Image (cartoon, rainbow, N blue to C red; front, side, top):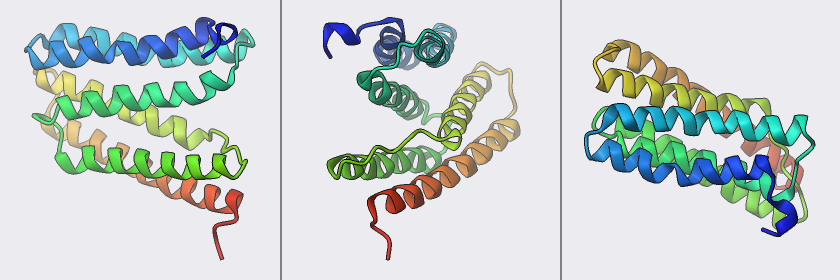
Length: 178
C-alpha cells in the first residue's frame, strides 16, 4: 500500500482486521462482554470505511480489496472462536464460500476482469455479523438457542445465494461458462 492509499476509509479496513486479535483473544479467555464490545465496534468500522470511501471520495484499489479481506478475517476468525456456540457446518460453509469466491475473483483478475461488489455480497456480510452478534447474545444468556439458529439458517441462505450469484457472475465475466 502506497502512502497515497492511506486515508480514513483504508484506516478503518486495517483497524477492522487488527481488532480480530483482541476479539478472539478476549473471547477465548472468557471475557465475552469485552470481546463482544470490540467485535461490535470492529463490525461498525465496515460502515465507516464505506462511508469515507464513497461519501468523501476516498476509494482506492487497496480499499476495494482490503475492505472485503478484513470483513472475511473478522467473520471467519470470530466464527471459528465461537465454535462452542455456532454449528460447525455453518462456519465451514462461510469459509468455503469465501475461499471459493475469492479464488474465482483472483482468476478473473488474472484475466484482466474486475468483479464488482454486489448488494448480495454486502447482505451476506451483514447477515454474518448478525449471526455473530446473536451468538454473543446467546453466550451471554440474552438470546435463546432457537433464535440463534433462526439467524444462522437465514445467514446460511443468504451466504449460499451469494455464493451462487457470484459464481455465475464471475463465470460470465471471465467467459468460463459453456
